[in-house]
Every structure is written in C-alpha cells, then in structure tokens.
Length: 279
Image 1: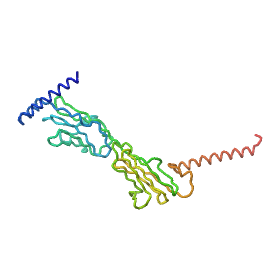
Image 2: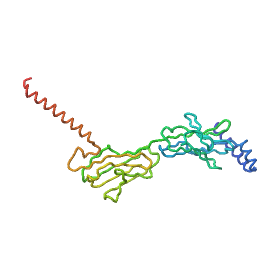
Image 3: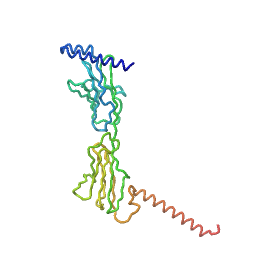
Image 4: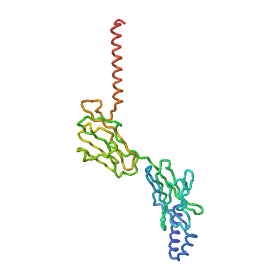
C-alpha cells in the first residue's frame, strides 16, 4: 500500500512541476512555494568512508526547494552545523558549499578525525521538517611492513620488504620508499626494484646483493596512510640465528639465556650425583 501511495504522490508531483513550467516566473515561484513540496534526490551516496586528515564531503540534493532553507545537523548531539551557506558552529572545519541555481548542498569537513564519525542529517525547513541521514566513517589508515621491526640479512643476499596500506578506503596514488630521510634513488645504486600494486595497496622493495652499507632505517610512505619503518642490518659472516627474517636481538638473547640455564642445571645434577653416588 505504501508503495502505491508513493507512486501516486510522485505522479502528482510530476504533473504539478510540469504545470509550473508553463507559468510566468512570478507565478512559478508562487506555485512552487504553495503547491510543490521539496523532496530529496536519493541517488546520492549516503554511506561515506573518509581518511583521517583528508578533506571529505557529504552531498545532499534537494529538489523543488523553493524558499526553504537547508541545514546540516550532527545527529549525536543535535548540533546545528550550517544553515544555508552559513556556518553555525565554532568548529570552522565544517562548511556548507552551494552553487547558485543548483539543487546540491554539500557539507565539507576539513581535516576530519575519528571522533567525527557518525550520522549527519541534511534537513529542510518545511513544516513538518524533512531530513535525510548520511553516515560518515573516518578511519586512520596506516602502512605496515610485513615482518618484525628489525631484519637481519646476510651480506650478498637480497633485502626484500613488502609494505601494505591498511584500512585505506581507496588505493594510494603512490607509495614512496625512504632510507633514512631520503627517497631511495635508483640511480645511486644498481639492483633496486620497486613493484607497487595500487589495487591490492601493496608495494615491494627489493635490493639485490646487499652490503653493510645498505644497513639502515627503511620507511614505506603511501600517499593516503601513515608511514611504517623497519631497521635492516646487513652483516658479514655466518650468523644462522640472526639470518632468519624478523628475528631480533632480544629473541636471540632470550634463547641463549634459556640454553645456558639448562646447561647449568645439568651440570649441578651431574656434580650432585658424583659427590653422593649412593644416595
């Protein structure tokens, strides 16, 4: 039944608008104000994911607005953010954008934070008021270099690092690799390759035939995510325990202490047996 009523209302509204188009400008304005009721264009995206720190927008389209006003309301505290193109909050990160003659009223949020996540309403000053809800989810996108924070590589082997941009609503436009504070320069050293796949949000850095001079802090920095770093140690000689990817010095020391402890206990038992053979 509700579907039929909505269909009938839409048809009536269509014919009213068609009639209004044949009138003079003054009569059109009167007709629209008295007969045509504002309604929302439901084709706009109403579930928006934004990255913390990057400007985002909520787009509300209102048809047949007439002389009514459009406001943006924050649902959680019913705080009025904007009325028309005026900002009604002390938080100047919120701004209403509107082009004269268009039916779109946009709420722009500069430098959104996770605390800005929630429901926002586009409200029209009809009697009774009508509103349309928009859900905003602000995420903190972070990069991650797979493995532990320290990597030990044998001199002559390859350094192989893989970076992933986590919780990114859209692929990064670029992913830069740094050694220390400088972008890795391919011309400074041969054997460096970077393979970036935007759709999977991953980037792989390979440095062939590593030498001790390649040791240092390596940072992965996607365009729309916080960066991530790993410390690489390129060492000479045979160090089997340290050659494993992701094994750090704390783990090696801990295992060494365990082995020494077992040896000490075994030695004590052996001495006791020697001193007291019949007990």
